[in-house]
Amino acid sequence: MINNVYDDEVPEVVTIKETIIETPTVKTFIFPYKITEDIHPGQFVMVWDFNNEKPMTISVIDKQNNLMGITVRKAGPFTNNLYDNVDVGDKLGIRGPYGHGYNLKKYEKILAIGGGSGIASLAPLTSFYDNVELISAASTEEELVFVERFRNSNIKVHECTDDGTKGFKGFSTQLTEQLLKTSHYDIIVGCGPEIMSYKLYELSIKYNTDCQLALDRYMKCGIGICGQCCMDDAGYRVCVEGPVFDKEQLKQLSEFGKYRRDASGSIVKY
Ligand SMILES: Cc1cc2nc3c(=O)[nH]c(=O)nc-3n(C[C@H](O)[C@H](O)[C@H](O)COP(=O)(O)OP(=O)(O)OC[C@H]3O[C@@H](n4cnc5c(N)ncnc54)[C@H](O)[C@@H]3O)c2cc1C
Ligand code: FES
Picture (cartoon, rainbow, N blue to C red):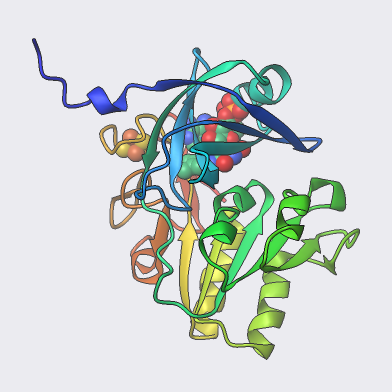
């Protein structure tokens, strides 16, 4: 028999136990999955709908009940299908978790900033750390995700909307700067559109604080083989060395904030 080194990478078929409509475009799927000590906030899984396979951050890590969750924003064929057609009792293929998550043990005061579906990557921090302050940002009030979940957590949450319908009016980066001016944070962590992440990186330099940011690049294998998600110049694979990068790594990524590559490998400028 051939010893296949990638046996572990065969998707596990799970049955959806619960779904939560978070907003008109965002839905959470919760399913049984063995939650080991090795699963950390910021990691991702590859999700298979038996037609296509796409990367999704792990948005729920429930150690007690061995439950995992993903939170999907409608963006195209795959995510629209999940939102519109997949519900309790339906099945999905899951492989992972993959990549490096946030590493925050040494920090005393943490400011986390999540924009759009990026908040999915940061939400599990609320059950791992109690020294996190969180900015939850969206374009408008009805697109704020996990409002109830954050209300029931022990952490301080600042809501922020572009149009001012809820919380701070303006961009999450403006609120971040306001907080950095008045309080000291040992680290800022963030996940969201890359324009936002790049601005957070600049703020971390300006205010001399550490930072860890989750980046996304087009992924195919999710396990470091195909090279699709490599970032110039350092060549870090977002699926293996990332998706969370620290300040030293970010410094080495010349394409960060400037361009990404589409499925064919062609450069798409921000
Ligand atoms: C590490 C990581 C974690 C992610 N976590 C989440 C999450 O928690 N929730 C969420 O809603 N989305 C997440 N995404 C993005 C998600 O994978 C894409 O939105 C999804 O693949 C879009 O597929 P589609 O067919 O719906 O849309 P399409 O029309 O195919 O694409 C819409 C957008 O998604 C991007 N995209 C498409 N396919 C991929 C792919 N294979 N890899 C990366 N980006 C792709 C496209 O470049 C485009 O910008 C994550 C991406 C990465 C890399
Ligand atoms: S997706 Fe294949 S190397 Fe990262």
